[in-house]
Amino acid sequence: MNARRSVSYVPFLLLVLAFFCSPTYSQCKVGVPAIKVGAQGAASGPHSDYGRQIEMGSIMAMEEINAAGGILGCKVEVRFMDDENKAATGVRNARMLVTDWGAHFLVGTDSSGVAMAIAPVLAELKRIEFFTHAATHRLTEELVAQKGMREIVRVSVPVYQDAIIAALIFKDRKDIKRWANIGADYEYGYVSWNLFKETLKKFRPDVEFVGEAWAPFLTLDFSPHISAVMAQKPDAIFATPWAGEAVQLLRQALLQGVFDNTQAWWQAMGGSVDVLEGITNEVKADRFKGKLWATARYIHNWPDTVENKQFIERFQKRWKRLPNYSAETTYSAFFIMKAAVEKAGSVETSRVIDAMKGMNIRNPGGVRVFRDADHQFIYNVPAGRPVIDPRFPIAVLGDLKIFPAKDYYRHPPFTPVSAAK
Image (cartoon, rainbow, N blue to C red):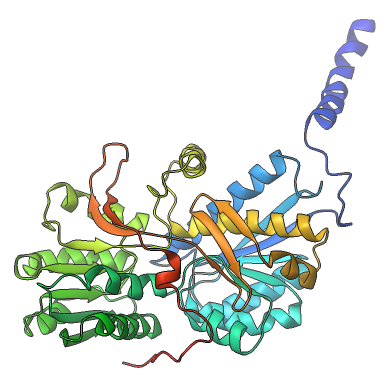
């Protein structure tokens, strides 16, 4: 009888022990059952890896914050949704996450179009969104700095990374005078090319821009675009198709002998993990001949800090993958949110925004500094050439060129940038 009673008490005692040994959130100091964060990104279709990386960054940050006791004693909960890379779906998700699920904060979003659709809704929802991928400069320059939409906060570097840093790298290459463009046939491609031309021309009045070919979203056959620009005999190519399209473009450029007849190729966002995975065999065989240059909004082998190395180790252990930039920027957004809530002592939107003023925070991607004029977090990301490093299973960027962020971020008051072909 006593033995049976002892056995029957075991599950109950284990529950009691688990209660007292695990993090407890009964002392949440902001008066909510949990701090809820709604995340979304493109989790279906050909660019789904980017949404998946946003989800992985969100979950890992949530798990680590909760394991350390939460935020002001409050448990963090995450709900991720696929925005299908469609503006209407993104807006619907944002409304559902806030009004039905009760999200206190929003995070993520890959597409600039989705971001620009969600942004005007944030004031109505009275919620901050931490944007962690969408590259359009208009999100922060127009909607925050000019129109005063304070609920927008961007953690990732915008299109400045794709264009201005390229000009800084190539301004001293006197052997390159003729540039041609194979561009994404939408705003991202137009603005990147225009900013690159505008910046490079300031340093190199002698350069010529000799050809342009525009590839619509989801292009698979780039051969006519490559042929069209190569007919102009450029010294170098500036390219903005990204993700799997970038891999296809680079492989087709190899087949058409572009790297035998040019001095350099700039691949915007070519430092993203999915692109590096796709071209690793070509890098191992030195098929790009050291002429391929790339960057991203974070690269996993830089900065060489304890924080970044430990982040990479934990991410690989948790997900069996290397993080791309949308994973790091999303992960870091959670810790920015955590620091702001702790400083504000509240999840109330205006108080959290005020708490970010003057914020200087160390993340895996380096030190990020909040700029109040446009709610842009500023941090450094280098560019480099894809190389093989035995410490990593895929190609990484090497021969890194590091410029102070102040040299390649645009600064308020902002001058207009042409978003046309």
